[in-house]
Structures are given as C-alpha cells and as structure tokens.
Length: 557
Image 1 (cartoon, rainbow, N blue to C red):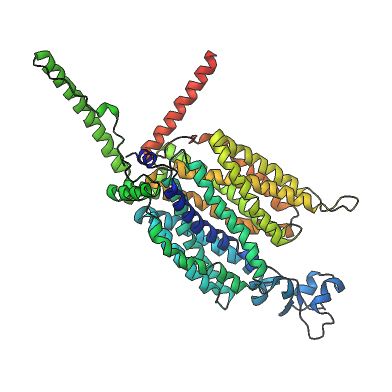
Image 2 (image 1 turned 90 degrees about the vertical axis):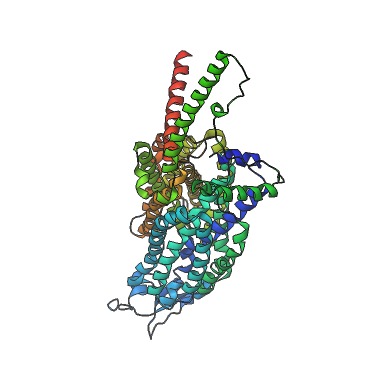
C-alpha cells in the first residue's frame, strides 16, 4: 500500500503534521537529553580536602594556602592514614551526589558507575522497546514510557544511598528508549521522502535545546535533588497530550488496520484544510486498470476481448502472488531480530549501521561529556556544546536535500577527526604566556559541530533504510552500538587524568573509520521507505543499475 500517495493528497507538510512533529519532538527529546547528561551536574566534584580535628585551614583559603596534592584530599596530613571525612566547597557547586555520599578517592568510581548503569539500561531498553513498539504500536509505548520515567526520576531524587541511586538510574535508562526510539520512527513515518529531510532535524533541535537548557537549570538549582525533580516532574504531565498525537498510519497499515490509518489521515487532512481529500492507499499498477473494450459482434472482437481478459487475469495472479509474499514478509508481529540478518543486503545494512553508529556515539557523547572538563566555565562550555548543534541541524536540512546522505556524512566525519586532533595538540598557553582557552574551545566546538551533523545523518539513514516491518527493531539493534559508545565515553574522558590528550586523540581516530563504509549503503535521497525486506533488496538493485548507467554514460561521453 502506498501511504506516501495518501500523504501527498492531504498536504504532506500541513499544519496537522507540523503540530504532531512539534509535540513528538519536544516530549521525546527534551527529557531524554536532560536525563542522559544530568550526571554532569548531579555529579559535579567540588573542591574538597580531608577533614582533620586540628586542621589549620578552612576551605575558603585551602586552594591558595595549600597545594591540592593527592595526600591532602585522600589522606591525613601525615600521609599514612586514609581519609574518612571531607569538607566540600558548596558555595560554588551546591549539593551534589559526590558531596552527599563522599564519592571521592577510593569511592570515585561510583560516579562513572552511575552513568554506566544508565547506559546499560538504555542498551536493554533499545532492544526491549524496539520489539514492543513494533508489536503494540508507537503511540502506546511512547506515552507509557514518558510517564514511567517521570515516576522513576522522582524516586531517584529521594533515594538515600548511592547504591539505590545506581539501580534507579538503570531503570531510567531502560525506559528512556521507550519514548526515544518511537520518536525517530514516528517522525519518519508521518512524512513523505520529500519532507523528511526537513522534519527529521526538528528532533535534533529539541535534543539540542535540552542540552542548552540543562546547564541553565543546573546553574540556578544548586541542589542535585531539586534539579532531578525539575527534569522529572514535567514528564508526569506529558500523557495529557495522548489524545493529540495519533498512532503512526504507516504502522497501522503494516499490521492490516487500514480503516484506522484512514481515520488518522482524515483528522490530519481536516487540520490541513483539506477535509474532502481522497485518501487512497492503492499502489495498483496502471496495467491492472482495464480499459473498456468497445462491443464487437464479430468473432475477432470476441477473440480480442477473451485474450485481453486472459492477459489481465494472468497478470492479476502474478500480482496476487507477490502481494501474498509481501504480506507474509510484512507481518510486524511475526518479525524478529533474526530478520535483520535475513539475506546479504539486509545483513550488510545492519552491520554497517551498527559500526557507524558506534563510532558516532563514542565521538558525540565523548565530546559532550568532555565539554565540562574543557578550560573555562563548565556551565558556559556545556551550553555552547548544545548551541553549536543548532546551526549544524540547519545545515543538515540543506545538505541532505542537495547532496543526499552519504557524501555529507563522509565529509563531516573527516572534519570532526581533524578538529579533534587539532584540539588535542593546542597548548593552554603560548610561549609568551598568552591564553589559548578560546582556541581550544573553538576547535573542540568545531569537532562537536561536525560530529553532530554526522550523527544526525546516520540517524536519518537508519529510519529510511530499515524496512517498516523491522524498523523499530533495526533502530533498536543498531542503537545498541550507540549505547556501547555512550558507556565508553565517560571512561575515555576520565582517562585524561592518566594519559594527557588521550580523549581527543581517540575521538579524532575513530571519526575517520566510517568515511568509506557509508558508500556501501544505498543512497536514500528521494526514495520511499521500504515496507518489506524485499523492497530493500529492490532498492539495492536500483542503485546498482543506476551506477552502471552512470558509468555507461561516462564512457559514451
């Protein structure tokens, strides 16, 4: 069935779709970025020193009177006894989980562990909710997950130990994918190939807005419990919009609920000012449209009529066979993760997207977490790391329409790699003592800008390439690699304490890996999303024939 034709008939970029896009993007991305990156501010490590009964220093003059060597932070003044209590500089950072539960010295690993637990949860959720969204629909899973994560966030704000905090973050990560994955899928399924490059970046604008607003909230809310409540309570009210967001019509069609899909499009058509639009899902080829044969009493006329009937009847039988195969191929409830490796082309898409998404994730999350460790004000740097994504998103709209998906993806991976290498080798000061903070931050933001463009394009590619029958499962599976990258990111940034420049060198190196891999994927510019795995294989064949035709034309020229 051809949903895109029906979307064109009701106006594929009308007010109805734009309203749905706004709601899905805001609800599905703002809270996701808040919870993913909240640990940067929940777990700020304040200035601190080991508390002793006869300490002659207080915290206000400690940093100037005493060099902050390791012995003064983790051991008593004699250096032989481990410290069991600390004094923290609450006046700068406020109350954090570090100062409340003493996550310093030998307990510092709990901080990285809390973020690792969240990402492990996200990994579990990407598989679990990928299946659930394909089985029960995008809308139900989307709103249920938002409400549950709001509850979990409020519970996290009231826990009394780091161990319980880590457990709750694990479940927050699991539920995160229940609304984040359907966000990508629903936006891609509500729009035609012509509008998708413009609609999809709106998701990333909402994500970037979340990154930009988080440091603003953290700056004014200097208590980690209240900050956690501030990013969790809004989710409890999002289910009120349940009746304003319809189920994906593409999913409804894929499970055979044609009338419900038609009703959804009628509502959108009414919003778009086209209440009388004809909603036709038929993709019936012109050959099937039997032309009226004028009556002829002669034998020749009867013979011609009979031949015409037999020809059409034979063609209809062939089409019915193909349709039966496609229906068998497209039953969402029966599709499994094994179908992602069904056939060479499907396997190639899954493996390549897995690798590219892993590389993108390591660089993207690593650079974002590393923003808080750059020289300068951490709140400003983190805000800039989100702000730099906005122009990259606007640029994305132009690039994917003009140049497709593969070429921009490859080019910006190269730029990101070079920018990270440059950042790694810029000294903090010149030989004459000049401050190079601005140069370091600028170079790092160019890297973040380029990685963001690449990350957004690969997300768009995944929603376009995976067939509808396994789209959520496919996105969920390749998102596993993104979660692996997100798990590694906090540890790579922490390695800078042991190996100077290591994070930026690593991010630069891995960014160069996908530059050629992307050209093994089909170019999806202007193409309809495949409904079945058979459709995907046909796209590869079309790309192959197009390439041969271009080579033939070049030889002739």
